[in-house]
Each structure stands twice: as structure tokens, then as C-alpha cells.
Image 1 (spheres, rainbow, N blue to C red):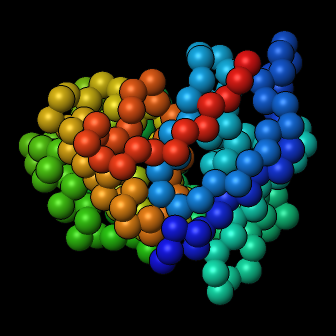
Image 2: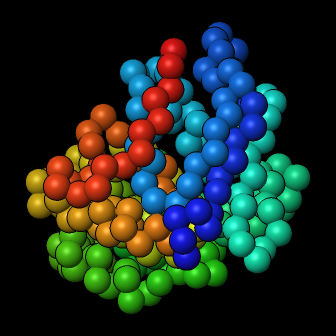
Length: 217
């Protein structure tokens, strides 16, 4: 896939909570590789990712996923399941289904994502040092360990779009360095589109820089 093979086109996306407007007519076209979503707290970064994940519904506007040789996929006009098959979201909070252990959690996700990569799960889990935790319920794991479990899923999902919200939070230095190296590889390969909201640079300092998209208040 070339750098221009995948496009996520946002058109006039808007969202508001009962007491305030969060996003107003947000439009852009994102390409494969890493885009670093920046902006001060409260500007709507997490809300935007949740909208693109299909967790929230915008007041107006939409998003379309364009891929060569495939029909355009619309966030709201098409099946929600079809959109979920194409977009993986790793949020900032605790992992859902935290009664499961990591192996069961990944097995559950394997059934949701058609291009799931089981061998990548093994490789990333080992790199994150998750071996001692594989048979423990997610609810019993530390915040950092839960984050690693979810990031293994994000790195292995096989979806054309991956959304990461503060992925470096709660990670130890070794795990953060590993994630940044994996994202640097994704930046070079450009086989998927990654939108990363983070207060820290998502890529190592010596790698090609991520494109930046700054949300204004």
C-alpha cells in the first residue's frame, strides 16, 4: 500500500455536551501513517476519537473511509459493524470486559476483527512482558499492565484505521520505547492510518516525524 492508499475524510463533524460545544464543523483528510492529534486539555481530542470509533454520534457531519479497490465506507450511512471492522480504538481508560484475562480478551477481539493477527499478539505480548499476567483477570492488573494488553490488541488488530488516545500514559520507559518503535515502523510502512492523541511525541526523536493536526479551542 502506498502512503495515499488510505484516506479518512472528516466532513463538518460537530459535537456538543448539554453544557458546551466540543467540536464545531471539524473537517480534514487524514492519510496513512501517523498523525499526531494535538491541542490543550478540553479541546475535544478524546471526543473526536470516540466519534471516529463510533462510540459517540455527532450532531452533524460524518466521516468516510476511502480505500483503493473497495467501496467508500461511511460512518453513519453504512453498517456500524462494517465500520467497527475497519476502525480500532484504544481509549485512555480501563479495558472493557475486565472480567476476562488477556488471552480471553484477545480471543474475543479476534472474533470481531476479520484481519486480526494472532502471531503479532504473541510477539507484542512478549515484548511488553505480559507473560506472568496472561491468566489473571484484567480487573486485577495495574493500569499500566491493562494499557499494555489493549495496546497489544491495537498493534495486532489488522484494521486500516487505528485510533490511540494517550497510549503512552501509565507505561514504563521500556514499554513506551517499544510502542514508539512500533509506531515508527508503522510510519515507514504506511499500511494503516494511525491517529494518535498524546501529550508526548508518539514517535522516537530519531524517526521521521509524524504529521501534526492541532485542534484549536
